[in-house]
Image (cartoon, rainbow, N blue to C red; front, side, top):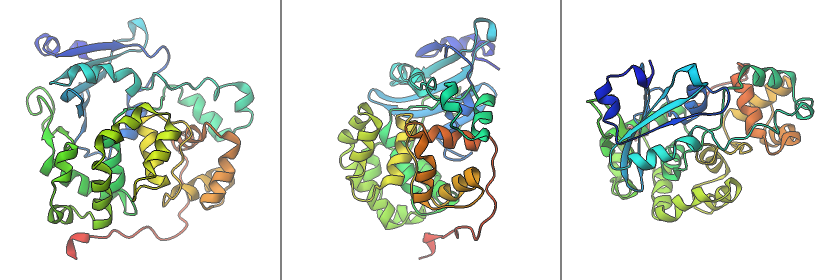
Length: 326
């Protein structure tokens, strides 16, 4: 279903709208999938009528709906937004969907000649993917900190708890927008969460303290969105509790950074090593393997993933811890 298929009254009632033409092949879910914090992410809902997002803007909260438009004029995305931040939300759509993401150098025949066959084949099958850029530093940083040194199951369980406990319903949630669509707490709301609520969420004191330290400079933090990705990453790492892994995970989403690599990830180095050499490796080995493609290392990693490669089981999985029992 596209937005054109929806009831005229609902379509016309949006506070702001936009039709965006990507200018080439485009897949909405492949592009924004990296933004979801699991299938139960309270801030993003997929539905038959499109993808719904709730988030804060400088003007206030907004609900944004994205849906593929008809093919008559080529690929297009219809965006509609509601709430005080509707205009800001619509203005963010082109960058959100990768309008600034330029694959032309990566797609040069000379560059393809340097790439492993599996990466080249994956790219040929996935010309529709872009690297999204949200520009929303806090929205990306907080859930990323929650994912530090724990399993995704733990992190996302805690994130959902905190969102439903301290977030706010997105404009129109439960009426024209999906029920349960949420907007993250504001920095002030995050800072007011008491220690026992972090504990109930299964978030240990090290991670909750890192969130608190970062958000005490929330205004300065949001300004990092206007800096180049490498500079924003370096400045993030001056905050105690934010290292290279967290900074990379953030700028991949906020800046659409084509080169940021999540050094320190529990699985990534072994995954990349297995894909490129058939053998697991460590972070130093991964960086050495990816060095020939500096500037596009994240593109290479995305193509490995989209190509369907699955890493052999090398050993025990990370154990799920429940900090709420302590």
